[in-house]
Length: 180
Length: 383
Image (cartoon, rainbow over all chains, first blue to last red):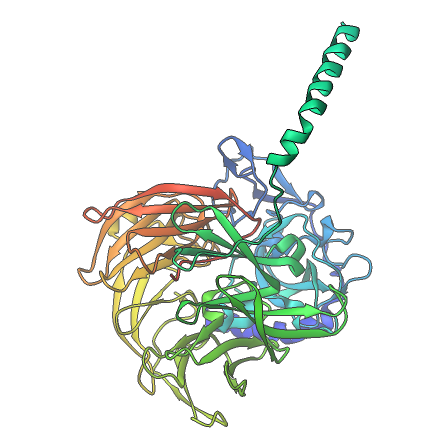
């Protein structure tokens, strides 16, 4: 990742707080062409624990397509989402569940939308003030960096600057286009 | 059938009643007690932030000999752990909310006795503590053991320096930097990794009123090949690991940091392999062997992926010595008392695993496991 993009991300990071509630008017295809490689198979058992990035693992043409509605971690917007999907917890892809508030500060991912071939800046707002949801834990890390690049770091509670800082779940809000 | 069964049961009751006075005379009632951790037991501490219910983080205390569970410590919300075996203490920096999940936030360092596992002291700290996954480098102590260093993030980063005995505190701003690496022999000094590829070194004044910062030259490329924030101690310095499999030996004792050597662990015929995990490697300071969690699929976003193998790399001989199958590990640590023992977190199967290292070949084989916890992140075997 070039420093130019990092600078753009940091700028987006600053803007993200204001953009948190804004739902993108951008039409988003419901189907992602990102292939899923199924569940992690260990000893024959399907284990939904810690679904690490598997996006580059297989691209079989006939693989089932990821659907935003089914809590699938392979949905393209979730490329750097580390946390519980709010869409599994009573909220939606970009809205917090009842009683939870979007975080004032966020981390930013750059995700490729295979439907239009464009890269989007995604603000991952944690939703705050309710107990940890515990459903649909995803662990996408595309472009993620350690905490010395805090704006693109995801192993921290981004509810940290909210009045109520309990972590509930995470939403993915499109806040801009990424220039290549 | 029912009638005869009833008769048999009645006869049995009669015999029991007849025998009752004699049995009562021999019966010795038990009393409820409490176990403690034997002082000489080698321990494995496993920090599980319990992501599905984060207010309930815990630390499991296991016997290193057989991984049996011996007790637990409470780690609160996004707690950090620091074992101090020389003081027989375990420090846990964590957060509590007044109404469990809401209300006033209180951050403290809980001081546990490492045999009774009871809280024996509590040190209040500022509420800017990084509520992060429990990386080792986010909670450290000085080389003499007297100062505790806590990573803050609001998200602006700083480090709180806490005098564990006198409870004096100093907050040192560390903008753009993250992770704490105490100087090996200078108790008032620590370093931190910075987003511009430098290492910042801070020297705290002896009265703990101020600190001075010296910035190193650019030592790594935070964009193209970032360093994991987990680091290991070598004999006289630190070893860092990059996403693409480079080991950096760093000297962090001086006023500013230097890198003394860079080693590429990836051979040409394994270019697709990369290190991964949250605690992706362990170093034996005596032998200079590094044990690294490795997985195939070297691409952006795979740096936390679980292992397929553990590689044994000889830092002094500068060569890859052995590759051993070891699936699904995301954290690895070496026993501080037995350099032939590794402990790992298997994040996929929610297991803690024990491994033995062959002294000659450095081949690694599994020698025990326990199904434990939900989302264990950090494993330590300090005594």
